[in-house]
Amino acid sequence: MYKAVKEIVSEIKETMNLRGGLKQVYFVACGGSKAAIFPGLYLLQSEAKSFGATTYTSNEFVHAAPKELDEQCIAVICSLKATPETVEAVKTANKAGAITIAMTGSMDTGMAKVGQYVVTYSNGDDQVYSNSNQANALRIGFELLHQIEGWENYQKAMDAYRYIDDIVMEGKKNCLAEAKEWAAKEKNEPVFYVLASGPNYGVAYSMCCCHFMEMQWKHAVCLHTGEYFHGPFETTDQNLSMILIMSEGRTRALDERCLRFLNTYAKNFIVIDFKKINKGRIDTAVAEFFNPVVLIPIERYYVAQMAEIRDHSMDERRYMWKVEY
Image 1 (cartoon, one colour):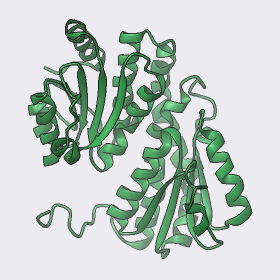
Image 2: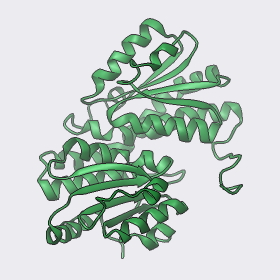
Image 3: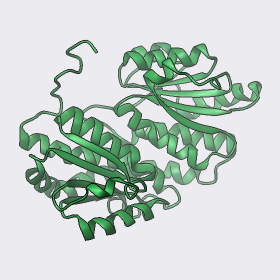
């Protein structure tokens, strides 16, 4: 039987109370799913006071599971269908006694069969962004904060969900001309740098690993704007193609520092700014956490324009699902 996130967390809280309390939340996935659950990780690492949160890629979690993984832990594990190593990650967490929440595309997947709890999310061409994997990773985090710690901004976070779909649709419409111009200009570039910080680091990962590398076979480098000045900025020149993803929230200062440098020493870059896309609709107390829910579909939209110009479908693969790996 399908249960809502609020109900799932309520049951988990009761169980954890009997086990001595929640100790740690693990966010486990690989590829695009790992980027998608990053918002929940960032939220809990920022806001949780009484328990910790960390992340693993699925196969490492299976082969090098942490010794603290036990009955006082929750493992939020995500895969759209049933990536084999992610299914094994659920089994690993189950075996260790942790409570598992399988985030997946439907109640019929291999993930749904092994998770103790199942959270399904919207996906595909007609995706409802307020019910995406990113949005649901956040929902789990918000409910944990609210039910376990009485988080003061819970209602503001819940209110924000009603704006997400309109913000994404409007954002796509407003950026289309710029995205097409960028794609036409950059379509033959061999390498791209994508820079972000805080809540948007998973967005940069998604753009690099999933949308440029997997879907367009383009080299891409994912960089944290705080780390950019500790080595990588030495490669910056007037020709290097760069994308700066700017956040609204506490780490915006890092992105603004990066922008100042790019304005001085670079030339071939674009800026995707959540604050300009949001236009103040999501309350500033929680807007920071919703950055990636909006910006992953927006950055993908940019790359999709390049795919169209290059006549290289976002669905085309050389190896994935075709060869043994």
